[in-house]
Image 1 (cartoon, rainbow, N blue to C red):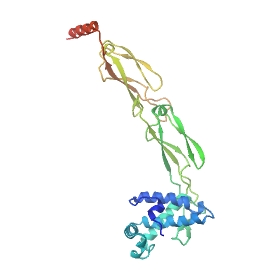
Image 2: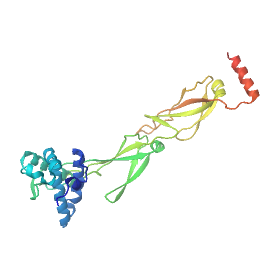
Image 3: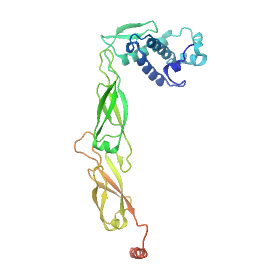
Image 4: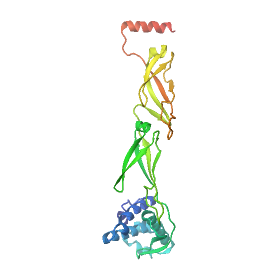
Length: 293
């Protein structure tokens, strides 16, 4: 019984062209004869993957297959003929070259299922690999590292101080291998900085809420302000208002890839009032309110 082409590539029937291409890359690399020497089952599987991609990557052939199933060829004539079929084979050749590389200034191109032919090719760099990595805000402040596994190896990656969401840490030569002697691509770890329960980050500045009692706000005083290192005492001027932002220069995030430059920290004032007053305290508060008009 003929295999379902969608099952062969491991995609859904409504898969996009990009999804089909990515699935083909993965399956071709997994079952390619160069990666499975003396393994007839892998070679047969590779040919099956090859055939599935030739059909599903061609809009006309895929439409016929979706409509008529395994009998689609009866309505298409030569399933691999014409300029469209050659274009798809060239496309597959490009994928094989990127995945497996080559040497000697030659490349191997798929010729349907009849074998391979060689022709001159130039060295080409391998594709880059991107992988997301999550860190905390405090790790972003201090710098950190992550250990990733690749090809059975553990690789330590340094995340620089001041990293923000979207910052890339590069590992040169750890991407896909190049083709025909070309250099390997790079591996990029794309940083995602998680939310912090206390601090809010805006670029290199940090915002934090601080509670100031009503009398300190009115008369002035000092409060303790948390930072990403240790708490710092800050002076409160008389008449400080709720919502006011008090700046502490240089107490924000370190600027990426600099030694001494930092953003600022802004303390947002939240004024608190006592919830339970004694009768005497209430009388004093009423007297104060009256005196203030």
